Image 1 (cartoon, rainbow, N blue to C red):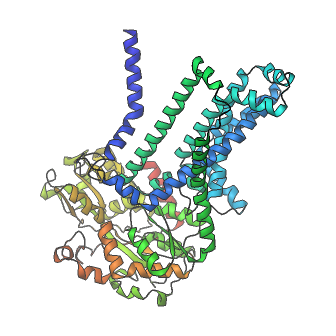
Image 2 (image 1 turned 90 degrees about the horizontal axis):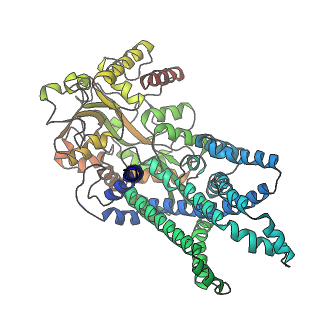
Length: 617
């Protein structure tokens, strides 16, 4: 019975550890973007993954940085461990305590510290800063794995080798290193794994062209993570699993006395095949980035750095732009306006695509350059109803990219027709536990303010507190929770009956579940406009904006992302059912009470933060 309980406990533990990975692997073969419902088997996501240059490049960066960091960390960590072991007991304790500090420190503290240090030293973010950071936080793990082997080492072995005629160098390589090799190998594997797994430090130290896979995945969560990420994660997991199995098998064979005896006769043979394989691997890992750096440095003025929301552009258009203009596009993504704003404080980008209220903030803080519309002739194709809006009244700093509205998405099977048409649906106790609210303060407060009859841009503290109380009431009575991208899964899978979301994503969800419908509440809503801006004035940036305003590019992009284009000719070329669809193109009457978000004062933003923190308690 005791053995059964032990085995059962181990089975539960392994199930909890590996079930999420197996689910990820399973849905990498799912014939749908859903992360919950199975729609059939397909290999399409693997095909698309190998065709996605950004994912492949980020995977390459991840592996390159992990290998180089593991090599340097292993060499430096092993040398440090040997040096620490030779110290006196008191000094050794001090150095081991210092060694353990990075492992016990918060990743956020480490990341911010590296960012500030590299900024102080005027290091441009890129491969160098990323590798330096990874080597630094990997070294303590190598020391931690090598030290136990050094303690087990016979103290007289080194002296005996010297007495037998070996030089200090020979004694080190022939006696010390073989004895501690298991610890070195374990430390190298741990350093490699930790480097691949890191996100926080990489987020603060990676440059535009050196973003690892973890940062790219994080930036894609505004809408939903593409199943292509499931595919690349599956490949990574399988490769690492195979590597660990091979190492364990080799170590098991090495422990076999018969195999160890047979290996003595093979020591003089040169493993030429292994050397060639290692050389090719090093050439692949090191040569690629060096060539990229040399190529990038030779034509830096021909590069356009574009910073956009995740999954918010048809990336095939980037190749088309490069072919037509000769510019090279470095395309990176963010997950929120706030993270984009923080990046602009420390990074340099040529084109950014923030939302309306963030455009206003960037203008107020003098972080954008005025546009020269002589270089953007296709701006004339932008419909005037989306220009000269409150966030950029003189239209000096931005060109509309997409537009849309926030509305209610509901399931017609469960929500009565008499209950729709208002934001009141969110507080209708008939649907308690089956509705949800946005998990971001600006959108959530905007809905509550509109329902109460106030402006979404109010700076009246009493009105904001009333809105907070209304959200708290819903949280305690009807809301299943506060969600963002989870809504994209819960509504199509009927885990929610209704929730607010953006009209472009409503189209995608309604394709997955035909029972879903959308309406703009009568009290009014947020009319949002995402716009292209230039933080620094370069000719290539204006050329890129002009290209994205062209009819062919704007039409292809609108079809890909599902959001309405402000480009006039794109609207005219749409089928009549799309032009008359109130989801894609809400009528003027529907938008009568709609507002665009404006940048609020610092005092009001602080009140938002305070009220939201209280709501999340």
